[in-house]
Image (cartoon, rainbow, N blue to C red; front, side):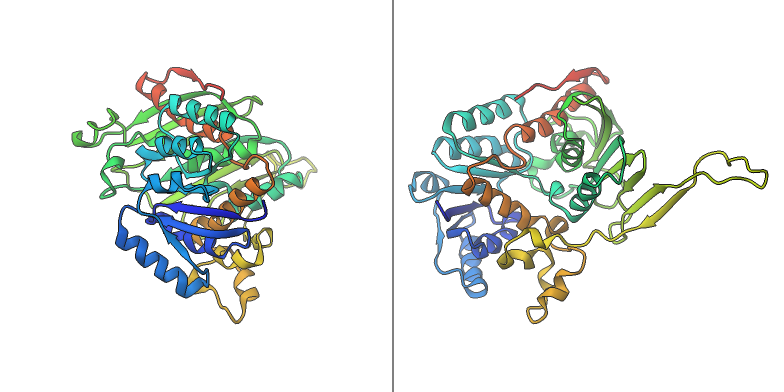
Length: 388
């Protein structure tokens, strides 16, 4: 197999991925489906005009996709409550599956997906944006070079207000959707989470308690990795005054990385310096630390040339001077992550290997948040995270 026939399901947020698939050199044909037929028609017309992608097939139902023998792979960008159900349907139909986060919101569904992948032999790719951002690529590169020394601690957070979002979001336990803060820690630690302790905090209006039985606008969790390393994650969804961010910090014995407080700024690297002596030749208490803002750059070179432009915002990309556009920090969707996720999904299938975020580590990332919410509901009881 040298090229794939791919279908994208869900064109709200999913619409951001449509032109990437249409332009990807390893995608032979591309189809779309959305329950809003007008949205699907408009998306197809737009793609034909701007991407020279040829025929864009519009499916009339999800079942039609499952029954089409020509479809190799399906990318789901559907509402959270349907993720597990649709993922299982795609895999059981003999097709490769990518799904936006979270993978599921019940432990039994995570287990069912892992079992379906094993039974069908098809690929599963969890489309976790946070581990394809330029921030993550930069920190991983520094880590691989040994610049941080030993990792001492990891911290993640995701603050976002979800008022007026679709109904299924209302009252969602924050750590059910903590993957953007948890995933970078798991992948940087290179170790699964084995144990968590969660705490819920704050109050929110009673109407938000009913759908999920969750009373907390904010949840925080302490993490223990299999390696023995520790970390923590905080997630807010409602009635909390904090500008949007999905961030992670890494604290090392030589250097530490901290995400910027305000998204328009740059992150900071702290570097531990050699001791300085006082006039009597005795070292001052505590080693000095240099703190400097850094550029994360744009890791477009990891991608086929045809989709590199999607690492920057459409309005910032200059067709006449593409290299000048790409030399800037990535500013496309979720830190330039969208084309990297698409490329990983496509190439993992064609190379007959597991996707980087797959049914095993993807399930661990989600299960940690589910277990931490259970812990929060039990006043901080320590919960073991199941293996998949």
